[in-house]
Length: 443
Image (cartoon, rainbow, N blue to C red; front, side, top):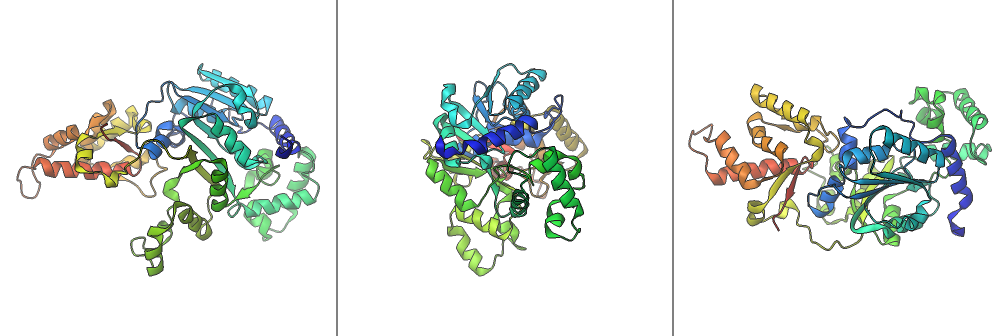
C-alpha cells in the first residue's frame, strides 16, 4: 500500500465525507430515466460482449465507489432480482446510500466502508462491477483494475471510466493554478472555495480560463460541489485512449466497448461518411479499435469521460456478429426487446401509431444509441407487438408479417415466405444496431 499515495486517498475521502456525491434528493427516482437504466442494465453490456440475452435475476452487482448511492439505485432499478453491493471510502456517503436504497424499498442490498484495493476481503464474486466517476481519482489505476478483476466472475463485465486529458485540459489548468495559490494543499473548504470564486469572478470575461470553465455555467459560484468536482478536484488526472488500453494490458483485462459507443465512430466526423477522402477510405478498415478511438479523440475531443466496458480476456465462447450470420443462424434465432423498452407506455404508443397509421419513432424512449431519430413504418411496427410479451422466434415474426402484409402493395401479388423473411431480417437488423432489439442464436 506504500505506493498507493495514502495521503491523497485520505484527502479524497475527507472531501466526500463533507460533500457526498452525487447530491441527488433522497426521494428522486430514476424509474423514468430510460437512458440511465439502459446503460446500467447488465443486459446491454453482456449482449455487446457475448451476443446473448441474459436474465438479471440472481446476478450480483458491485457499485465500487457508490458515493451517496444514486447509481446503486439505478443499478437496482435496471436489474430486477439482482443483489446490489456498494462500497465507498466515505462513511457518510455509505450511510446515505443505505438510506436511499431503503427509502426506495430495495432489500437485497448491502453497503460497506471499504477501499477498492480491499475488495477481496468481501469474499464475493460479481457478475458486473460499476466503477463510475472514480478510477481517475485513484493514485494507482492498475492496482484498482486488478483488484476489480480479482473479484469478477469469468464472464463478468466491468464498467469504469477515466477523465480525458484532451477534453479536460482546461480544468487541469485551473487545478494547477489553484494548487499554486495554495488552495489544494489541504482539502478545499469554505475559505478556499471563496478565494477560487472571487478569483474567477474578478477575471475579465475574455480570459481563456474564465471563458471556458466559468461563463458557460452561470450558477457555478452558488454550487460549491461543481467547483469541488472540477476546479478544486483533489487527485484528478487525465488520460488518452492509448493510456487507457495500456492500463487494460497491464491489468490483463480486455476492452469490450465504449459505453456510448455510437458517439465514437470516426467516420461520423466527416461530411460524407460514405465518401471518405481516399487516404481515410483505404486506411480505416484495417486499423484497430484502439487506433480508431484515438483518431476520434485527436480530431474531436468532446467526451469528458473515456467511459468503457472491459472483462477477462478471451471469452470462452466465440461471438459471430449478426452481419456474418448464415441462413441457418437466422432461421433458428429468437428476437428480444431490450428490457428498457418493455414498458406499457411504449407499447401503448406503438399501438396508437399503428391505429393512426403514423411512423413509430422508437428512439424517443432510449435516445442514447441513436444519433438521429429511428422511425419505423406503422405497418412494419405492428410486427413487433408480440415482443412485449416476451422473446419471439424469427419464424414467428415472419408468420405475423405474412398476416399483416399478405399482398405486395404494388403488384397485389401474394407475398412469398422468402420475401417476408427478408423484410423481417432487414427490420430486425436495423434495430439490433441500436440494441433496441436483441438477437440470440439457437444453441
